Length: 325
Image (cartoon, rainbow, N blue to C red; front, top):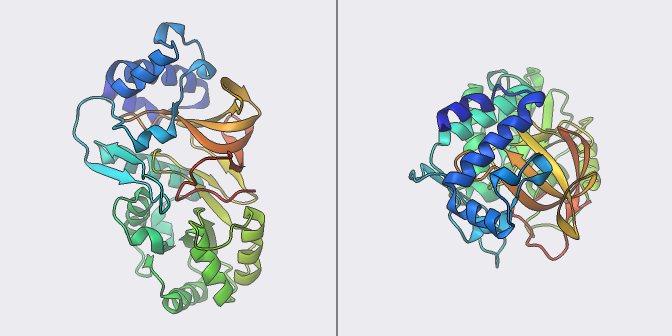
């Protein structure tokens, strides 16, 4: 059953999404004890679910206290959130990391093309300084697939990063500079460049390192200092195995196997509103839980396009969270 579902995930089109999501729901209801218990608390079962908005969405906070797995297989990897100083990290048990690799590679190719066509420079100091980061795992894999001698990770060596960017610009090499928000901001404030061949991409997160800025403020500083027309953004989290990307203007696009819905803030079972808290269906989460309720606030523009408005009040700030608008 699992192999049959997996084979359908990455060949899916929009018309088939709901049918596959329902099949995955029934599969996870049967084999995921934590999710099944949660569904029963809501008096939800497969025979009572008729469409996507009826689905039970597991609160993302449960990844902090429970082992969320579908089936009894051992985990290849345990991805952990960075959290904040006083918060409990989330743990995502991944028994088959090849599923994650297939998801992020297919998603990258969809929005940016073949990683081999890019030099990829990653400014992710806080993530490099700890184990268990799904972002580091993804970025490392993409860097190796880029096959470019200048690709690599950077901690705090801004001079080497600046020199490398200049060399790539001189050769007009297509380059992605990917970084956590506070590190990109530090780099941009210390270096003024003109990056004509480079896509600058922020992954969100100040993590208490800098005063919070709106996304527009952050992007304006980066654009003015690094002379880029746009700043791209990546939307992901430890509890998901898929990402959405914004190429500009903060409008995120999800791959066909991922969908974001909005739920009413004061009535969390009312799903399908235009604006509200984000419920995410990530079919790549086949071995954990595909149906996640988050604390991000979103506005839905189409079935695969959404805007992140901020965070709900009184929620822990996720280590890799997007900036509050």
